[in-house]
Length: 529
Image 1: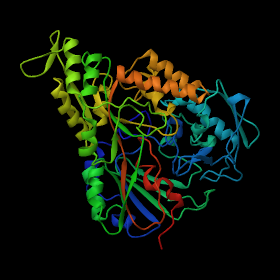
Image 2: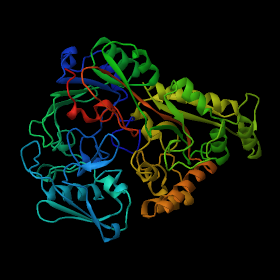
Image 3: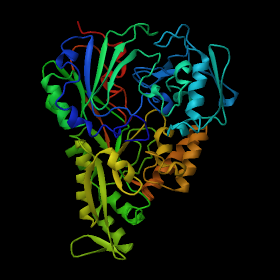
């Protein structure tokens, strides 16, 4: 789960795996079969909406929609609905886009600048339930200049603004007549993208067909099915049986396909991290000494080796070790002695059962993880084991997201986050106090004025050195006062039938499987004939 609308924590998905486990995604192997023009992919979760107005596809790679810009395999921005990258004037406060000629929505209506204006204005409307709208905080005005030009005026220069315009564009002539929060567009979308949604059985599958009038050319893969299978083991079993052409899998299960003829394994590095949220409202997880002790007690290296089979890296903060924005020198090994000293000094005394207590309160809390997610389960159990060595009793429980979400403000959660493109993406919604408890934003209800100031500086400054200093400050503050225990950054693993040529992966965010993986550009696949 994340602050994103497509999330590993997607509500209504966690309970779906067992229900869908014994049913084929459509006509069984016939949906995938051995045909290069049809593919069935097993993914752990589904979106709770298909409307970009509520956040769907906002980071790109939507198969139904396009943004003004898109990203290539190396995550560089490229034109999509726009003819070219934007013209930037007024010292970074004005961005002008010229639309590509002849683009139509899948219902045959032409794309116009008014559709772009409608999309952004609706997302920014306070009445729209889009929890990611803070990422467009810089936008003062968006207006059409004729049918083919869109002009954004910003309140302040925002270095990463162009990357935010991968936001998918929706048709005003359809979505404009609906409530964006409840309208039928959420489940029956119309876009300009390479595929058209033809069916959605909640908790089971989504089916797409190639858009024959796609401006980028008709895809060779004519039918795409996303089978929703929350349980990792079930997903692997169905892939092995031939019911699926491909799947996203945890590293230990992906490794079991290593020597399979006719299948290839793909590994994508990512910004996706696992962390334990430590809500400030709980008297145990809200205690700084407890947070510091947990940060020192955890054995991140062992988690990478034993849980991820080496397919990942220790996480000492929200940014991965090899990221250019990573603050050097914050790496820290497990140090149980220091963890115990911190707790002793704070008055947390060890009781007869080995659990510490202070003022009659035991150092004990519940840690939830989503049912069926083996990687999170293993992280949670390892975390509890490490915490116990320091005298902290972490009680691990699995649950569906329907059970977890109402408890997030008070109970710890084994969470997943991470965004690509710019440090502002993800960090602001993860940590800024103004977003505390806003859905999956700032789940820990973290409130640190120094971090807020760093986030605001990083967002508003145009100077790369000022931004780097701000994000360095932020990461060092998280070491001194952690609102989360950061555990690992995870490499994403995929297994896919070897029927297409020259497939690639991107560096991926937390959200993956549905629009990432080797199928991030499925519209460009060519049969390996």
